[in-house]
Image (cartoon, rainbow over all chains, first blue to last red; front, side):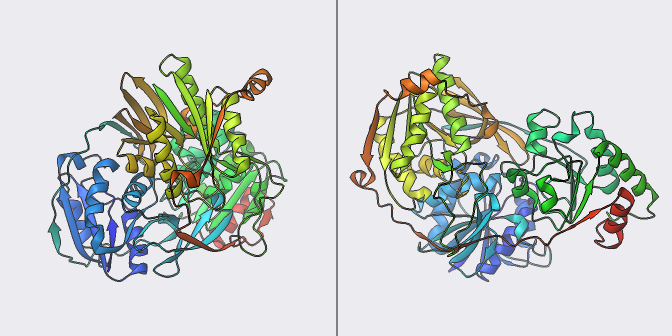
Length: 317
Length: 249
């Protein structure tokens, strides 16, 4: 039986993590079908059909699918489920909200947030905020699996031409009403997908001082992150938070400035390829995960860092 | 309005967990346990709603072994009126817990069920959504703000793109984010008073729910360790290393 991937999109285009989820789905089985539930979302369905790993696209459009409400999405998936061995989705807030609702309807014990596919029924997933990895085997006939997007490479986005089949909408769930969405707009790369992240912690001492970080992030084309302590202190808004309760990031370069390295924070960044820590406390736990540690006062180090960057002829973007 | 709040006992969030050498799980013997942090936010919110005169009763429930009752007792000390302890041993998957909660909801008939968005031990993030599916109730997950309006709630949700606001009709499920509120500490007199508040004990087997695991845990291991890094002497050396050694800038 084929695998059904639930696509994440904004009705106009696919969200990038759909490509990572498609890779995970294709590691479970070659026969991947993708479902796009939306409103006026034909363009996103077309993009989906162009992913070479997708063999068939199922598309359903209705006004009550405009805002991705799980109560409306779940019945569509449940109705299709008998034809599929696995239902797959990203473990971001879209998939976290939706998949358990599907799994409960199917009487399946969901496997959340996998980072590796061992076989069609066995997966590796982090537990305790990534402080342990569990290998688990699902014994349910039908498997509901969410995947950690940053643990899978995005699939090719062009070259495919899967057929698009229209399917019927399910009834609207009337007890949940969407009111509004406030998206944080920024010219910077998104924290979850940025190649470089520069993060500040409580050591920044004020929101104003974050401009030292902003300057460097601009120079490097980086996203700006923060520890929970910096967010709780009101230095920066919570959409910047990296950690167990914030975002999990896996950039090529993570620069932690004035961050001590609480367990909660490390859980969100320690898989980064290269980690730099700048902290005046040489005993700070952040140094235990840093490839390059600089024991220094950040208020001296950051301006120097900017100076050194300005001296470079080229900077990768 | 009656609010049922589900709480879970987990390894305290400040404890650095250790993986058992035989790979069967993590060490829990002689380890500090406490209430799952966002479950504290769920209790706090329910108590605040009651204090604002918009709820009449707050009932705290846990599902688990004997000692799990500590979490219910703690909820009673910060303002819950009474408790329920559904006794069950062994690994309980979110699907089993949500089926147990469904049975209790059918009996207790609360208007709202609150719980944390995720437990910090298994990191599943499933139970609230599963319960709302089983009950066919609306769900507001990752709530960072709740306004109670007659028989509706307006809930602000923390999503990847920013914030989303939805309106849900009661009865409903809300899963709580850490940003929802600042949980209070229990005062000593309230801890003493909580000892007299009733906790009903129910055996999971009496509810007719099969709790046997569907997902087999094959092994638990430590994540791969990062190889030790180096300390650099100054900023110039750092930038040089990033440029020429790590080749990331």
